[in-house]
Structure formats: C-alpha cells, structure tokens
Figure (spheres, rainbow over the protein chains, first blue to last red):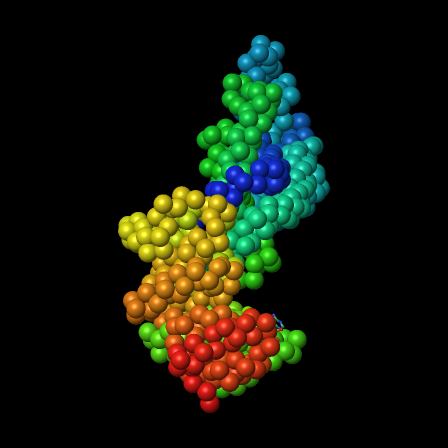
Length: 297
Length: 254
Ligand SMILES: Nc1ncnc2c1ncn2[C@@H]1O[C@H](COP(=O)(O)OP(=O)(O)O)[C@@H](O)[C@H]1O
Ligand SMILES: [Mg+2]
C-alpha cells in the first residue's frame, strides 16, 4: 500500500461510517457507556484520595497523657514510646501549647478558653506519633494503649480504612463494568463493520481481481472502526464533563475551596487520552476481528 | 511469458480439471483457447490469476512462480494481467470513468497520471461520451468495453478475455476481436477463451484446444479433425456453412 492511497482509504472509511446509520449509532452508544462508567469510578476514586489528603493528622496517632502527670511521668512515657516498633518519629505538644493552638484554631471560643490557666488547663499533654506503614498502625495503637499514664489514643485510621474499602470497591466495580462493556462494544462494532463488509462484498472481490493488496482492502474497515472510536470518545468526554460539573455544583465548596477536583485542570487530559485509547483500541480490534472473520484476507 | 510445465489441477471434490498440461505463450502472442464446456478453459485462467492453485507441475507467469509463491504476492501477479471476465465484474456503484480510475488507484497510481490515462483508455474503447454513466445504464457491449478499458488501465503485459463474444451478436464479436487485435499490436499478449469457431477460424491465430483437461491440439488456425468430434449444434452449424471456407483458410488436418 502506498502513501498516496491513504486519503482515498480514509474517505472510504468515512463513507461507510455514515452509511450504516443505526448500527453506527448503537456502536457509539455502547462505547460511550464503556468510557463514562469507568470514567465516573475513576473520578470517584481520585476524589476520595483528594479527600484523604485534606484530612489533618491522617498519618499521625495522637496519644493523650493522663491529666495531672508530672514531668517525670511524661519522660517515662516518652521512653516507652521511643521503644515501640515501627514508630518513625514523634513530637510532643505540651498542655500549654495545646491550649494556645486551640485558641488559634477556634477563635469563636477564645473567650471561654482564656478563662483557663496552666493549673486548670483541660488540654492534655499530647504525643504525636508518626508511622510509615499503615499496616502497622493497629500494633502501634495497641502498644500505646498499654503504656500506663496514657489516657487515650486517637487516630484517623478508621476513616482511612473506610475510604480505602470504598476505593477498592469502586475499582473492582469500575474494572468489571469496563471489561463487560468492552466486550459488548467489540461485538456491536463488529456487527457494524460486518454490515459494511457485506454491502461491499462484491466490490471487494472485484478489487482482489484487479490486484488490490490485503492492506488496501482492509484499511477502510479499520478506519471505520477508528472513526467510531474517536467520535465516541469525543461525545463521552463532553458528557463526562457535564456530569462532573453538575456534581461539583451540587457538592459545593467548603470554606471557599472546592471539595472536588477541577475537571479541566485535574482530569481533562488523562480522561481524554483514556477515552481515545479505549475508543481507538476497541475500534481497531473489532474491525480486525470482523475483517478476519468475514473476508479471508 | 506464460509457461505450464506438466500442470495438473484437481478441485477439492476430486474433479480433475487439468491433466498434465504443458504449454508456453511468449510475450506479444495472440492465442485462442477453445474447448467445449467443462474442458478446463476457465480453470486454466483461474490458475493464471492464482485464484486456484495447481496440484502438480510448475507454472510461471511473468516471472512469478505460481506454484510456490506466497499469497501476499498475488496482488502483484494480478497487476501484470488485465482480465475481461465473462460477467465483466464492473463496480456497479462507480461510473465508467471511476471504474477505470479505480483500477489505477488500487495500484497506488498518481492522481495526475490517472487524470491523463483514463481519458486515453476511454477513447480507445470508444466510451468517452459514456464516462459519467453507471454500468447499469449501459448495453452489454458497452459494459464489456468498460471492462476492456479497465483491464488495460495499468498497462499489463497480458490481456485475458473469457468468452468475450459470449453474449453479443456476430457483428459486435468482430468489433471486440478487432479491438483485441489492436491491443495485441501494442505489444500485449492476448489470450481469448472462446467456443466461437467462426471467429477462431476467421483470425488464423494460434489455437490451443482443450478436451477433458488435456491439450489435444496447439496450432495456427483450427483443427478440423477435432471440430468434427464436437456434437454441439453450433459446431454442426459452423461446419455445414463454413467447412469450405475453413479448409481454404488453412485449417490443417492432422
Ligand atoms: N469450483 C469447482 N469445484 C469442483 N469442480 C469444478 C469447479 N469448477 C469447475 N469444476 C469442474 O472442472 C472441470 C473444468 O471446468 P471449467 O474449467 O469451468 O471448464 P470450462 O471453462 O472449459 O467450461 C469441469 O468438470 C467442472 O465441472
Ligand atoms: Mg468456462
């Protein structure tokens, strides 16, 4: 096949694309689902990650020392914490520092907080224990709880674990939906291309007799599949964008900053590339299988 | 150049269509292939196009060894031959012009060359004023001339016409044969498959006669002795009316 044949072959692909109206529309519809559903799950998962990143102290366990503990006790506790396995670092916030920080964070109750002095300060001395591996969190928490003089141990581990369960659920559903829809899309595109193969059967036979190469015969069908894929990707991207923007509007903002990521800045490029990849890949695969099956080339 | 060396061909169902055929056709020759229905004529042209494969022997066409050539070379083999099929095999959804132009597009010819050469071949086939018609809007003879123009479009060395006079009147048959003779004068090898004895006798070219898949004669003019063996009515007819002429024209008896 020569380079100068390419414009002709592409125009043939377009002609077939527009000829099989109903089937082409069906192919595009299925492909759009094949893109938007996994796309939606991807956006959900990414926004869960974004939510987790927004949580303070996600990677920190707070261990509160019992009220009334003296400096001696605190040094003893510190020594025990330093011996716990998998603790990567820790810092301390004294009761006084804690009280000041609270006043900063919650200016509305500053008046009330001002009434406390270091004698009556209810904020406990706090150890902020950091770790590198989420798998070890539970054992660290157990060890912290075992230290006498530690009143309470708090972490965001349950939020983290809940979010992760949700993420893996979405990932599994998303992948399965994609696989199933992908198979359906391939079958529907194959049927669409088959219509073209049948309507051009005689023409193809004649082309062979006058010396057309297999590539020359096949190329328009592949082009037809690719066009179906690209058109689906463009439409799916538009729909995904609209759905996302509607969701962003509904979720709203928190303290003036958007809760969800921005479609254009955060997702447009990756989703566009993914949709095009899904579309072109399924178009090419479906056309190739179909041509192999219905034309012995 | 075409060379059959001891070529046999059997269809998958066991029918022996050709049996140890050996023949050689040089570039620039004009050859009739005759024989009654089922003799193996069409099979022979199918082998030339590698539409079917030979079962044994050796077949060479324009430097392609067909018996051991990979399938991907078939398009390039076919481009060295222009075939006018009995049913013409025109593209029904393309105009006369596009039918000829498309053959050139298939081989990746330049658009500028296509624009120049198509009118030339349409003129040669006297179709210039029909360029924008579709095949269904043409008479059988006109469709056949389109098929000729298309067969010539890529300047093949060999032109093959399968039963070109099969469904036209005798006067038209002469026109078609005259066109083929003119093509032959351009230096092309011309192979005409036919059972039109009148025509074969008239032109006094090389005649290869097939019978039951075997070559039973290969000579210039018609072999009267073998004509005698045919029982089809049209042979009877041509012998009755033209026997004298046939002998006078140099049909040599064995
Ligand atoms: N596709 C086929 N399958 C099996 N037998 C065939 C096929 N085509 C032709 N034949 C047989 O091969 C022999 C030669 O046929 P063919 O070449 O078509 O003869 P002709 O063109 O001289 O009439 C005949 O006996 C015919 O029945
Ligand atoms: Mg025949």
